[in-house]
Figure 1 (spheres, rainbow, N blue to C red):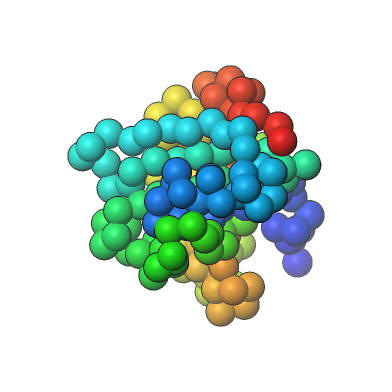
Figure 2 (figure 1 turned 90 degrees about the vertical axis):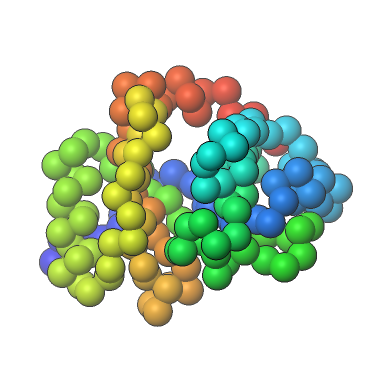
Length: 157
């Protein structure tokens, strides 16, 4: 058996939200997580915004996707715009070899890959459907050269 994903570095926890600004306001008021890096997405994008913040040692990612645009997000978007829904745990992989190896491992275990995509110059990412076992999706992240600088200014709360 190969090393499991739980022996890898957890990069972040991703949450689906209906309205990133209202979700942030709720987190600020109720938990004191008030400083965020917000990335507004282009009008033709399937999403509205991404937001990132460190809460202690954990990085949180809020994903505000337009309903019906990304099938593996649509069912996770909460009705209430003030709340969040755990969507995925993201794990950092160190290189292309490990990225491909974990893909092989997950597919061999019957976890379907839902997407293989990138944020050009920042990172590559792959989502796997682990909901039957874990209750959420699992993401693996491979940094590209600009990734470290993109995340360097994510606020710490």
